[in-house]
Image (tube, rainbow, N blue to C red; front, side):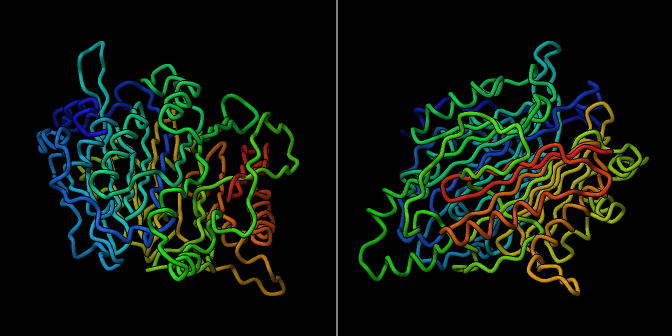
Length: 493
């Protein structure tokens, strides 16, 4: 499938008038994000081939005016010197032209605000835009991010963005620009929407989203986790597809041994074949019932897994989704007088709230919107964290997601649970800043064998133990192919 066979992306709207904010003008804003993660390879080292040259790229997307597709500030594409091209291949997702990402983001209804990069990943802060069809006006909101690795891409967008419409564009870019013939794994997740009636296709219902993804993937499965409609959490993931990688990139036994070493922690290399257990009904109790899953990395976790070219091979993610935020705590997220918005205001919020103490050594890109709202991306080696906050009282929401490991907490007289304590300390830091009326924690950890899975389960269960000032309403463990997930939901006492 070439670009010219794909629908043309819509043009981006004009820059917003100063102070324009969807949530402030209309009294409500859809804070809960849609989260898409596409892996084209288990690790960057699988991309050891020279993909097709850029000249072979069909240009229907690139024909769009790049100035229209980008924010007026036109953040620079990451410098090639910041991109690690020493892995033995010449093209990967980080070498994709900025104009292609701009065009892809236009289908999602986003533009780029700013970019930070390191040797492993590029982090994009995004601005959302949606059309008011009744008033024929463009309205602008915020709180979205994109992370581009050599072998995978992560997109997290809020509001009425049409995130899943980016899937065919991303697949075509990866295939034609980078030589990725297939998707290794895909994950899509979100919390229940606050205003589902405002969503656009294909996001008007979970069934519509699943149908859209099933049209692109024949190895996907969908799940609904949680007890109430207001707090349900939705997940779609595909099983690992190693056929292309195994047939084309493992040429001899020496290569296989090296790849096994490099991809330690990834389920497809396990000695035993994990059987996928579909979820036919929701677990409405707090009992632990193993199933199996994959995804993110813990922001309070110390990783002891091996790495290849600086990329950890053990995959973990923790996400905290918070609603009904304390309005006194939210005062910091509003613009003050003639205070500059953007990076200046974002830095003030970091210092005033203590967000800058979550990862003091991280490379942080923080942004305050007019008249309120906040987004932040932070990088530390191959890990990232991202924070989004919509502080309006009638629809307050904040999210925190991280894949950055931290060292275990050392407590005198206590041994063996330092990692769990580190994660719990991180969660406590976050909820103390935002002071939510309720919050949900999801924590993914990959496993390569039974022993690691047992360790995962012990760690996950302790992570969502009780938090002072809150009552735990749900504690659900799921086992997926190569991953384990713990879901916990808490409400203020």
